[in-house]
Length: 62
Image 1 (cartoon, rainbow, N blue to C red):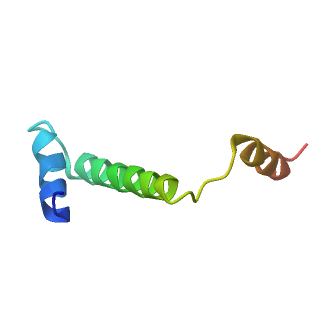
Image 2 (image 1 turned 180 degrees about the horizontal axis):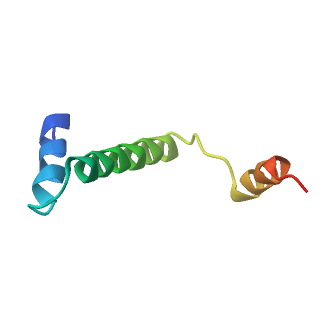
């Protein structure tokens, strides 16, 4: 398993040479969100789609 520094370095290395600071930060943030989501899924900290749809409907104003 790669260290956090190695993982971040790999993400940055894969970016085009003309990438902006903002683009790289967005890529790092996106990767972090994906990693957190996968960890939540592995640890069964998820909710079924039906429950999510029910919750979203309570947010909607008619």
